[in-house]
Length: 65
Image 1 (cartoon, rainbow, N blue to C red):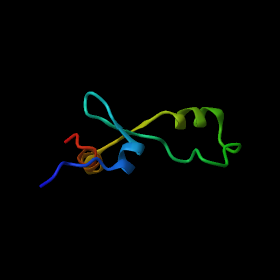
Image 2: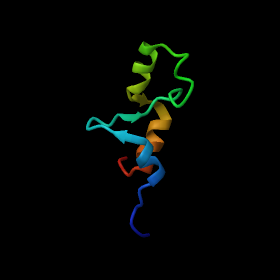
Image 3: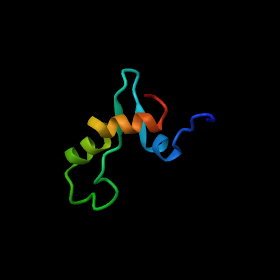
């Protein structure tokens, strides 16, 4: 068995914090921003936490688990 490889697609989309939380960018921010409130857009700019089995799978892809 060779070296473990990082999934590059996952490394571009997700980030793992020091405590092991998996963060991702919010969706609904690409277009049609004029109809969204400033407050909503501001909230969407913040990174969100990925939870459950999904987060575990992502950690595995990034070689952090």
